[in-house]
Amino acid sequence: MSIQNNRLTKEQYEQNFSDIHPPFESRNAALVEANRCLFCYDAPCTKACPTSINVPKFIKQITTDNIKGSAHTIFSSNIMGAGCSKVCPVEKLCEGSCVFNLMDEPPIPIAKLQRYSTEMAMDKKWQLFERKSSTGKRVAVVGAGPAGLSCAHTLSREGIDVTIYEKEKLGGGLMTYGIAGYKVTPQFCKDEVAYITGIGGIEIKYGKELGKDITLTTLQQEYDAVYLAFGVGLARQLDIPGENLEGMVDAINFIYELRSKGYDKVAVGEKVAVIGMGMTAIDAATQAKRLGASEVTMLYRRTKEEMPCTDVELELALLDGCKVLWLAAPKEALGVNGKLTALRAEVMKLGEPDASGRRSPVPTGEEFVIEVDMVIKAAGQTPYDSLVKESGIDNSWGKVKINHQCATNMKAVFAGGDCVNGGKEVVDAVQAGKDGAAGILDFLNINNK
Ligand SMILES: Cc1cc2nc3c(=O)[nH]c(=O)nc-3n(C[C@H](O)[C@H](O)[C@H](O)COP(=O)(O)OP(=O)(O)OC[C@H]3O[C@@H](n4cnc5c(N)ncnc54)[C@H](O)[C@@H]3O)c2cc1C
Ligand code: SF4
Image (cartoon, rainbow, N blue to C red):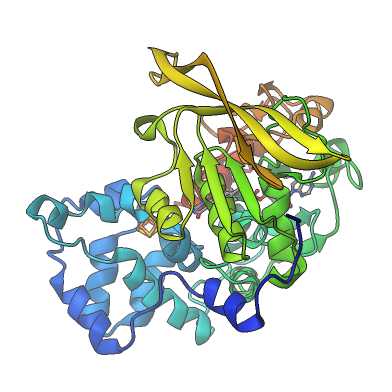
């Protein structure tokens, strides 16, 4: 057994990482689905969308071939509507609340229709919003992920000059560096960032890291307001013996390498264990399998009832051939000559519910060993604890604390997205960016109503 790259041919990589939710094949196919919509007055899909996209309206506009209007409806509520159409876990959001589910009929494919309109807008480079005349105000945004980009676009529309400080070489945040390649390609992410900044008035300074190249104090002095949107970035450690063995990797790093270097450049084991059962764990497991690992086993301390991923995501991992061991917790990574060879794990049982209402895993004392040459740690992410604390920002376990107007305890400093909520979905970060912009506009006495 060994960890190696280039396990597959170029064609196999391309096939394994091709679009998991392909677009409509024709205009007619889109029209057929759009015309199934009942255009509910009290649309549950709109209520279930964190950015409150007017779903019946944009679908109605598709039925009349008003694609520009449809894209405008979507982007008015969610400037990352194109990206969200590819990555939203729609089964628990808009499509999950479609009334057709109650009639045992397939829900309207809202995301696919959203993709139909927004991709056409991006392809044809329709700029659907105009910047108001300059207010002379300047705002700094830290992080060019969904929250930062959404905040920047909303502010720019109101005539504010925005400078985004981004530590990486590309924008998009976890869209570019985290989400699985079979959902969004690097080229799409680049195009989406270019489309959003195409409104003008937004400059992205790449390779600039808060806490290293710039300080919060400098930003406070140089700008009228600051919006923090630096996300969460570090994978939670397992705290087990053998954690430093070669072959123990963290899911965020593994996926980051995959997204930034390319599939053939990233080494994967032959027998891989993935710890965790959230979206990141699913992405790590499926991508390890698609990179050519012969066995991928997911270990989760609880049962299917408590898993954080959706049934659709679990199904994807199972269809890819990943195995799941429920009620199993890692105890020790075993190795020879510094290299991982096996994982010792303990069988758990469910105890009483914890504060979150989920039943806690309790050790049974029964153990087993599985042969592995790679373990991917995907048991949650932790906030940028030291950055937050050293900057003097009020926080809860490293998560930035904000008030109802998205303001932190620091003068003229606002925040939102994963760095505040600890890690949700792209669509939540987009809404957080809009809320943050509204707080900043209020603070600057600029009326955006
Ligand atoms: C592996 C994985 C898979 C996911 N899959 C999905 C999915 O399928 N669907 C979905 O909806 N959501 C998914 N998510 C969640 C989603 O990606 C995030 O909720 C969303 O990207 C959060 O947006 P954000 O702008 O708050 O943070 P981020 O996207 O993390 O963006 C933060 C930005 O700030 C930059 N930054 C960080 N620190 C600094 C600093 N000190 N100075 C300057 N810049 C800094 C980062 O480089 C980054 O560009 C996934 C997350 C992960 C980890
Ligand atoms: S943004 Fe996401 S949740 Fe909202 S309507 Fe579009 S696909 Fe559904």
